[in-house]
Amino acid sequence: MKWYALRPRDPADPRWPLPETPRITLKAENAEDARRRFEVAYPSEPFGTPGHPTGDVGPGSFRGDAEGLVVEETAEPPAPEA
Image 1 (cartoon, one colour):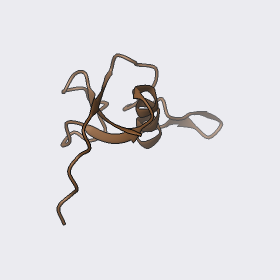
Image 2 (cartoon, one colour):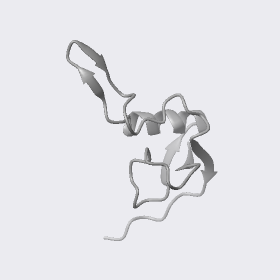
Image 3 (cartoon, helix red, strand yellow):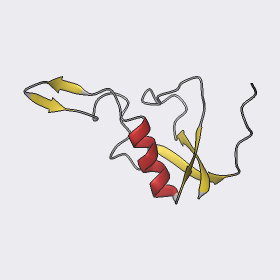
């Protein structure tokens, strides 16, 4: 698997789940797999009611916005310092 860096196209995008982190790096098979893994890890803030759920499309969702995220192949990130 390769390493991919994901970041919002607009650094001020309020949907970005970790405002103090400019990009997220993860392993994936390809760029689309990286985007899918990101959406699983950071789905959004679900909203709705128990009788009418509309989960994973609330504030924070990049689902359905292919232009909102930039996905780039990158080198393996350094190990975190203990």
